[in-house]
Length: 83
Image 1: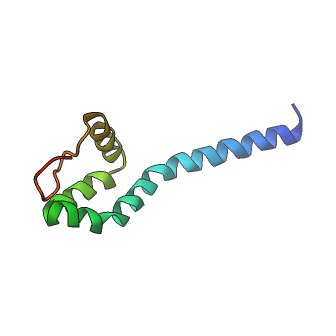
Image 2: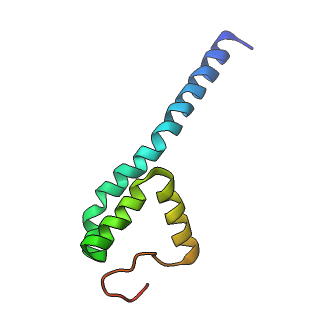
């Protein structure tokens, strides 16, 4: 294996490690960006709880996965009728 190939593999592994550490925080940034819309749809308390659950790194991923499988939100919209 040549020196340039080893250097490329080292750089790729290092970049992958840094990205894996950053992924949970990126989800938190997206959750904060959608806070206002969630509060409009679900009300003050429901929107805050929904966004807080989405903000917690692995809890938000599990919650969203279960909502997709289930086909509806855990915290209903203010209208009270599930979609």
